[in-house]
Length: 490
Image 1 (cartoon, rainbow, N blue to C red):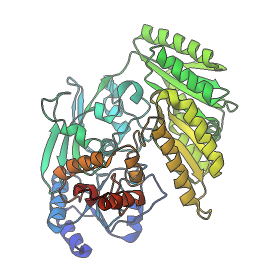
Image 2 (cartoon, rainbow, N blue to C red):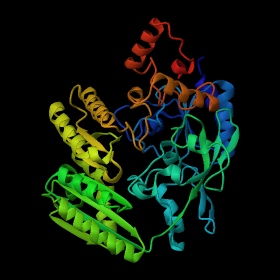
Image 3 (cartoon, rainbow, N blue to C red):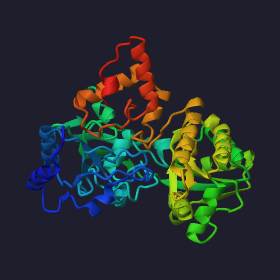
Image 4 (spheres, one colour):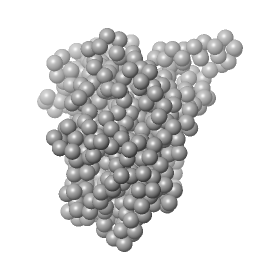
């Protein structure tokens, strides 16, 4: 079915406020990729609704006219999930930026999806509360995008990811129907459709109001910066600290390449430039508890081979130490205009082995790889650095990325921790799940969106998008296996 985009544009302009429909080619360029710049697809139209009613009207029109749609937040995602790679309407929630309700007695706040992550804590900090999930892009990423990807961040080790802090969702389904998933209680006596929606990457509908759980700010916080002569020694420190029963709020590691980039970025050596790795450990809680944990963690880091352990108790000094970690990707971007950021997970015990294997792959493919990651929960973020002008570089970069993810799976891990599958990693999903598993997941998707018009083509491998999937389907058909329709539709 072909879509008459000029006619659809006229209908959308009748439904939405002035300047809420983007159709000029030069303006559409802003929506042709997300944080993954390796793949670009310019959408035919973008709409910028401001209310739930407007989103509902847009999706009802899409349903009536058979138009696919892609929900998009701030566009900081790193898996191509917010990109319209086929002809589809982009529904950008960046103008839905209101904090709708603050309920401190019940430790809740209700926000629209375009609210920036860091704004939530800023809105309640004066009353002694904060919102725990804090992706590195928290000054730019939106809560709606965090919900779509089930984002984590520095503090996910102790406090969990987005799904642990979302109580309820107001959602517009594929046909414009508005419904609520979850409720004001942390545990509701019903099917957890809220949990199903979080991390579904826009394939089940569009969230338009999100109820978040707030936490009390801790009484005391300390940050340790330990530097090591090898990545293996830093990995051993992670193992010792967690094995001792210390539960840091966050535990982050950076390698030599990242350290040098960050120090150059700030124009001074905030981190020891001669270190092979640095480990940032944040400890929070009651004052005596933090003092004891700091003493123990320092001793364990030294036992693992730390040369120096720096303590930061003052809020400004702590923020300075974290600033380098939060700015690591930007700092590396100054050295290499193009990068491909992967997102695999491995058991903590496998960290030294996997990091050594990534270094070997880096040498084999002749591409530098910077490692900066959530060491406490084994969530790796290797950055493959390259120069886009080099002939054939895109294919080589993607091959290296695939090899790194295969390493993670073979170590007992996952192809993604918090960046989602999107279009970038859908061909690798079959490494972790059987055809029956994938078909069941797609049946859940069809229950929400029978025609598959919400973010079409994302997450699941199909014969159209993945050669491996096409071969598997062909072999099964030759063997006379009857495949569920869902296994090949999306």
